[in-house]
Amino acid sequence: MRLSTHFFPSCVPALVLATASVLLAGGCAGRPELPILEQTGSRAAAQTALRLDALLPADVLLVGEQHDAADHHRIEQEIVSSLASRGQLAGLALEMAEVGVSTAALKPSATDEQARRALKWDSQAWPWPAYGPAVMTAVRAGVPVLGANLPRAEMADKMNDDKLDAQLPGPALKAQQQAIRIGHCGLLPESQITPMTRIQIAKDITMAATVYQLVVAGKTVVLLTGNGHADRTLGVPQHLRADLKAKSLRLRAGDAGATDRPEAFDSVWPTPALPPADYCAGLKARWPGPAQ
Image (cartoon, rainbow, N blue to C red; front, side, top):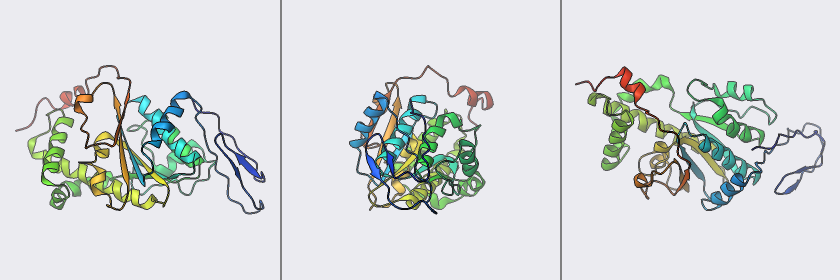
């Protein structure tokens, strides 16, 4: 449970945080808005902060989620809040918004609606109640939030870009292609496996480039994305500069330990299992079987 947001008058001499008291000196005239740091006071948030310590320091923290897991969205907000309260959050990058959008021009007192407009948020694809808490925690801390995903308008070109086939080592490329087959329930025509894999790789490259824009020495950039993109062996980490210290975290819903590959993530945080769901049902209704 998040504590309510507090707005401070423009001339207060100090901002009192739950974890520290920070003295803010200087006059009021022309001063920018003070950060509004949201603290999460639950036992779960305290546990998240302790587990986060084991992953730090890091220039980049990639948080891989299962998109429909509410516990993952809660943990993401707790991670953002913990880093912001320490003054260690450099920026927040999102798979859930396309590259080129940013909250950097917003004040800490910006509303959810202002943040949604700044990010050109697609609520049909990504429910705002799931991601808004993490986004607004960063906004209120005065930290930029950037869209990091490949624009939909560029996908057709990327499908035909054979240079992307060389962006992963051979075994990793084959593993990524197999992940595309499985992710589409075995229904995707084989002729589309290579083009769809190129889109996946292009997304990872785009997210890596967005992360670079946010890097600040001594702080951590957080990328919120799906587990596949956070995979060290296949995803965004493959396209990050070697001089950046990146850590990958998998948030795992339920008991899927047999599928955890130690080399893929620096840490795996299990959360309660979700109710059984047939994720392939919708695809099967549209694609009765793979095309020849």
